[in-house]
Image (cartoon, rainbow, N blue to C red; front, top):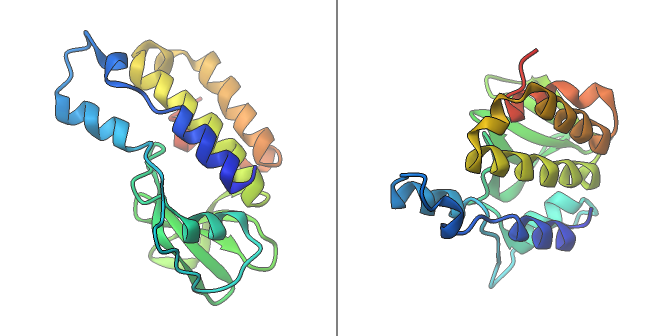
Amino acid sequence: MNKELFVEQFRSLAPSEDDFMGKGLRPSFVNQQIDRFKIQLKTTPKLKFISDDEIVNLLQTYDCSSIGIGMLSFDPEPEERDGYYQVGKVELDIIVINKITKEIEVRDYADLRHSIWKCARNSYHFLDSLIISADCLKKILLDTESGDDNDYLLTVVENCADKAGGGQYIDFYKMLLGYFD
């Protein structure tokens, strides 16, 4: 998925205030959840470096810093490091794009040489799987019983891993979507 399609599809997933009606939630919580789907075009994009990577270009063109997909968030700007681009976080751990393989992975914040999870074959596949993940997490937010349906969650996890490039990525999506066997 390219960055423009990701932005369009991600924005279309945003819940409205009406989606939360009758759930007894505080307005501040509702607004916070809606804000997690905001992506704004940067008024003055900063091209720190030229890259053919879709996520790097996404972060240089759009402000994705308010995005929240479970525990995943994007950095305001991509950072070029030795051997990888740092593009986001999963809690404290770092989401990186390997410059050689183009694979997306989560590395341990305390030891950046240690890969905790492989996430996707490349940025295109990762963006595809993030749309599916965000849609699932939105459904769980609006209908908490969905989160208790292990069959539903496993189907979504498998779909995400498939979009990401195969079964080697399944553990990341189990964690992101809260699926426990």
